[in-house]
Every structure is written in C-alpha cells, then in structure tokens.
Picture (cartoon, one colour):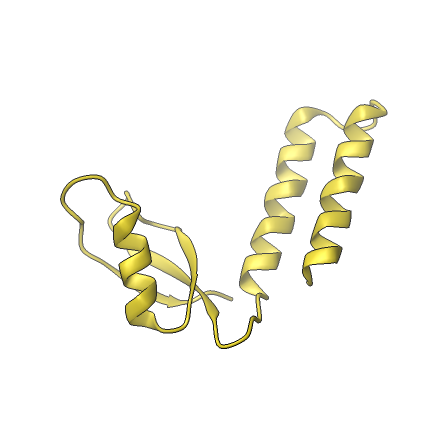
Length: 92
C-alpha cells in the first residue's frame, strides 16, 4: 500500500465516522489496520520497516531504517532509562 492509498483509506474511515456510519472503535480498528498494512508493505529508497520483539516495553514497535543495526538504535532511542533486551526483524 502506498502513502496515497493509506491516506485515502484513513480519510474514508473518518468520513464514515462523521456520517454516523462507523463508531469510534470501528474507525480506530480501520486506521490501525491501514497503518499496519502500510508499515509491513513499506518499500522506501534503501530503507525497510523493522519490528522489535522481546521485552514488553518494545514488543511490536516498528521503525524504518537502512539496516537492522540502525533499527535497533532507533528502537533503543525510544526508551527512557535502561534499554531492555530485544531484537529486530524485517516487518511483513
């Protein structure tokens, strides 16, 4: 899914909410689905989406980076205090 498609899908979800055709929970689920699909299908110039696994504090965090090492650094930078043990793998 490219960025434009993702934005259109989010816009459609918001429009359904505004029209009363979707509840807030429905919209949240749809937007989360769009975001997850976008992240796992992400193809940028020399970058890839990586998902962290391991400690609950970082479990499921997705970052975009040019390498696994850079992805680990980006995940670690999001943590306040001691960085827990985790690993990253390509999302998707």
